[in-house]
Image (cartoon, rainbow, N blue to C red; front, side, top):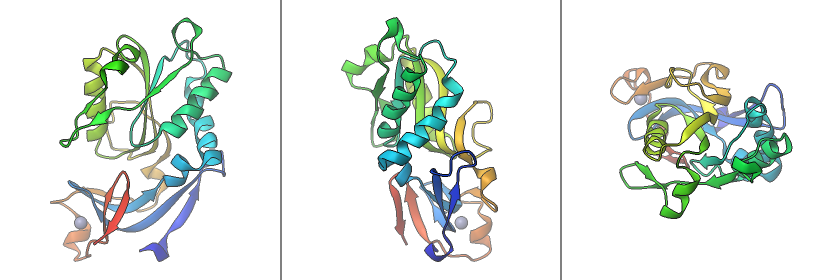
Amino acid sequence: MESKAYNLAHEKNPMITLRVIPGHFTTSNFHISHFLDVSSMKSNATVARNVAHELAMPYLASAQIDTIVCLERTEVIGAYLAEELKESGVTAIGGGDISIITPIANNIGSLSFQSSMVGLLSGRNVLLLTTSISSGRTLDSALDCLAYYRSNIVGISALFLVSSANPELRVNALFTSDDIPGYQFYSSRNCDMCRAGQSLDALISSEGFTKI
Ligand SMILES: [Zn+2]
């Protein structure tokens, strides 16, 4: 599995690389042909700054972004993203600093925010930042939550997007499944790799993978 791994460089910024591991992976609901390791993008300060620089591009003409909501431990990127936007003249209401906040996830996967954070969401311009959008379920949960707080979604950014996910939503992604030859995404009951008798390699989550 790891012996077939390779690094995919971002087309505009080779400082940003996606670690691609081919195999047969499962989440709780889906089977996937590649594990995408984005950990260096989230935790290496230099790489995260480069990631934020690229993610900021679609928003540099925005009049106002009040809050960046960070899912799946993207706060480091979110902070650099706020800095990039500020340097380009994008600020929160009244010229203030952009806030970085994270939701609380319960054990059935729905999201909420601490009461002290609601003022940063209610009626505010919100940019949603996440690592990977595949089935779109987590994204849908986040959008439902932000709709409840009456946030105005000004953009959705991700490190990786499966091209078929949520086609009605415009997502600004650094990498997409089209960048990875042979990328396949199946419901767990309808998987071509299972039908071909290929055993599972690992269970994956937003935190990484566990070998089976
Ligand atoms: Zn399978």
